[in-house]
Length: 139
Image 1 (cartoon, rainbow, N blue to C red):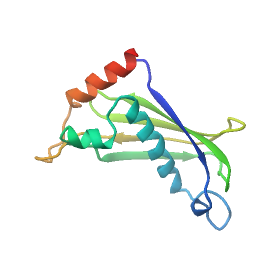
Image 2 (cartoon, rainbow, N blue to C red; image 1 turned 45 degrees about the vertical axis):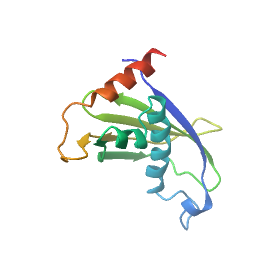
Image 3 (cartoon, rainbow, N blue to C red; image 1 turned 90 degrees about the vertical axis):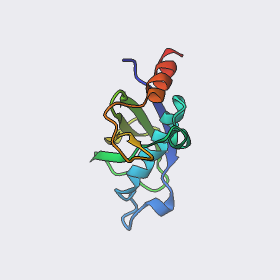
């Protein structure tokens, strides 16, 4: 499968840093989320479209590997890449220093489809996901 990827640029804001002037470890999940939303928009299945399609997509797994600490006002590039979509949505993340390209953090998240009415876990992604990803990959 060709991969779909999206990037967002982030300047580490003051409210994201701890007493040591580094981005607090929990903020990286917010950075992942910003990149994830950009990626989901590439195949027209961001959170409003998920809701409209009748499915919830909770994150059931999250992994973060901290390589280097980001500091206040540091410019970061956060890339999200779709790894899997047939049975679940697995997205890899790579956070780099925007100026040097140095790797700062990496990780992934896994989301599963849950029927919004019955709350039943779906073992195969809904047709809309398969159709939308297929269209995006052929553009």
